[in-house]
Image 1: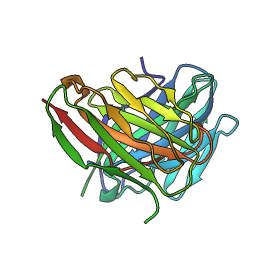
Image 2: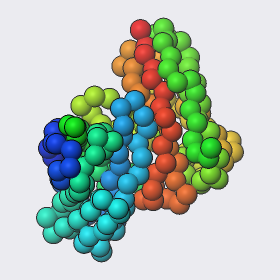
Image 3: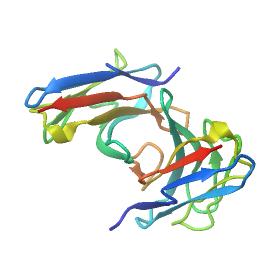
Amino acid sequence: SQQGEEDPQALSIQEGENATMNCSYKTSINNLQWYRQNSGRGLVHLILIRSNEREKHSGRLRVTLDTSKKSSSLLITASRAADTASYFCATDKKGAQKLVFGQGTRLTINP
Amino acid sequence: IAGITQAPTSQILAAGRRMTLRCTQDMRHNAMYWYRQDLGLGLRLIHYSNTAGTTGKGEVPDGYSVSRANTDDFPLTLASAVPSQTSVYFCASSDGSWTDTQYFGPGTRLTVL
C-alpha cells in the first residue's frame, strides 16, 4: 500500500470556502511535501514541511504535520476557481531513497 | 523559460517497438527522476539518477532503461514496448537529494497498442 494516502479522494466546494485535505503515512519521514497537478500538466511543488516542524504557511496555504499520528493536512483558504486541481502529498520514507506519492485528492472549486 | 522539457508530448506506439522519451533540464540540478502516473496508482518511480554518470532503479524499473551522460539530459528507453506501459510519464529533477523539492516536466502521454 502507499506510504502516503490522501483523504478525501475527491472534494467539491464553493468558491470562497476553505478546503482541507489530509495525508497519512506509515513510517518515519524526514520531510513531507505537497504538490498540485492541474489537469494534463506536471506536478508543481507547493510546500515542504520537515519532520521537526508542526506548521507552515505559504500565502493561502497552511500545512500541518503531526508525526505522532503520522499525518499532515493541507488547508487552502478562500478558495478560487484556479485552485481546481489534484493535490498530492509525498513522503521521503527514511532509507527508501525515493519520494512516495499518494494517489491524490481531486479538488473542484465551484463558482 | 527555465525548467524541464519533455518530448514527445504524446505518442502512439505499436507493441514491440523501441521508444526513447527525452528529458532535458536547464537548472543544473544534480538529481533527475522518471515517474509514471496511472489512474488509481498515483505516481511511481521508474528510475533515478543522483548525479551525472550514475543511475538507480526505482519502484517499477522492469522494461525501462535510463542513462545520464551529462547533467542536463536523462532519457528513458522502452526497449520493447508492451501495452501495460501505456501511461503518462513525468521527468523531474531536484537540486539536492531526493528529499528536496522536485520540479516536474509537462509529461509524455504514451499509448502502446
